[in-house]
Image (cartoon, rainbow, N blue to C red; front, side):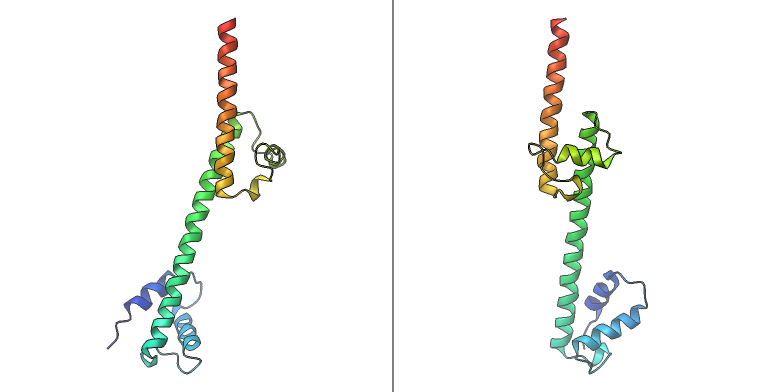
Length: 142
C-alpha cells in the first residue's frame, strides 16, 4: 500500500488555473507513457519518477521566487541611493543613462543582476559619502 501524500503536496504547490484532477491525470498519463491516468495503477518506479520531477520543479520555482525577491530588494536600494544623489528615478532614461556610465555599471538598470546591483549600491554609497564629506568640509571653512 502506497501513501500518496508526497504527490498531493507537490501537486498542490503547482501553479495552475485549471482543474487539479485533470492536471493529475495528465501527469500520471505522461509518466506511465499513456498506459493509465490512475495513481494506483502506477508502478513504484513511475510514481517515484513523477514525484522526483515535481519536487525538482518545485525547488526550481522556489529558487526563482527567492531570486526575484532579492532582485526587487536590490533594485529598490539602488534607486533609493540614486534619489539621494538627486537623480530623478521616475525617468527611466535618466536612470539608464546614469547606470550606463562605465565607472558605475556600464549597463541599463533593468539588465543589472543581483550582484551588479550590489556593486552599484556600494559605488553609490561611496559617492554619497564623498559628497557629504565635501559639504561638511566646505561648512567648516565658512
